[in-house]
Length: 301
Image 1 (cartoon, rainbow, N blue to C red):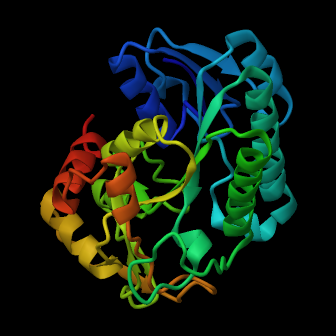
Image 2: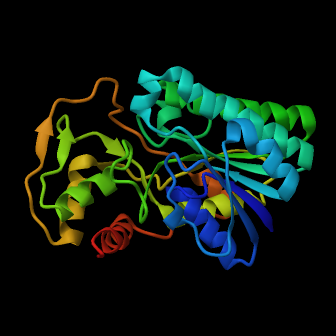
């Protein structure tokens, strides 16, 4: 497989690159390194330091990829609220440039989307047909990307796939990011600091280990097209998550509670039964197993 991974120097993208290399594929990374790190990229990978908003067409014309795993994004909810124009420029206009580059080169796209930010509050595991009620521009921009992808599938007969991920965690997650609560908590424990917990900690999320997210991403390349949830179907509160992190870290420290963030989701969990039927995908890592692997990485010298 000859593939381009946009955002391939980032958290999930670099793991996708590693998995493609393990399969013997020809892998190209398209990344502007605004968030990605050069050390995340394995040897033997051709790196195109470029921006999807202006350079996707040139890179695709040169590489002529069979598949594009599109993970480049503005992924910080707070940034999307403060700078919705920038968020839309990267996540909507950038995705359109990738779509046009793919159309010109006959490339299939597997798009990294989001479940929680699109569905809004969940009363139980949300299926793909759950009402879409994003609470922040980030969710709106990801949903817009999905809709453009669906329109291109209808208009041009392409088979692009959108994967709505739960909260992905694991090695290489940025502890300075807004969404990486596992990395943030672990980093603070490693530094001897008290993790900060917003609200009362009862808000829940669906945590998916990065290795499982990558397996779903690669399986998406073989799918005929559409939207699929990638989650565990299990709700875990922030309080429970922190207890589990303390156990795997062997460290006990009282968290610092602070005011709840305005607009934060209280419940988010995904029904991934469609992915099981159509991709043959199921998560292989329990939360405790994934946390143990993440702590081993974040605590290493």
